[in-house]
Length: 169
Image 1: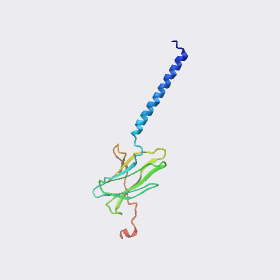
Image 2: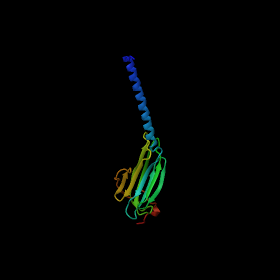
Image 3: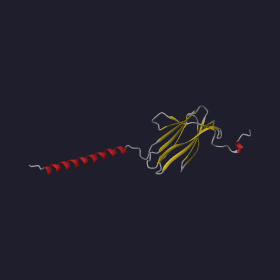
Image 4: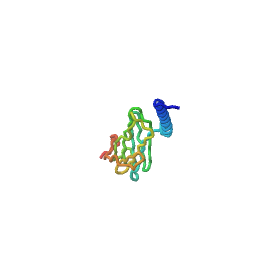
């Protein structure tokens, strides 16, 4: 059998086409396997922990464009979390933490900050933001690293008590 240079080119093109198809097939298999292990549709979470001193209560209040979480009170060692899906627009949760002795108006330090940002072009699944209140401030981690101090406490209480609750002194 006589093979011309034209025939060799056709054989080489056929081999390249076969290899390209095989490569695409492998890529599809790998993507399918990877996506089946992904955490699609898993909710994102914001988690708070009270690591304040003895008899100190942590008061938490968070809001977003769509939700408002009422006041949550945590004793030392307690944890509170809420979960949600990112919006296709921007998802933001702004929170206010206060430390005090436990009565609604007995808080003498606070911190206001953005506890979560996500959504928009990049939608997150299973993202976790851990916030830990300690005596010197608010610490943050995604859970994979050691928490770092992000915010210091500000003296005062952003919630002013009503006139009848204020001391006459």
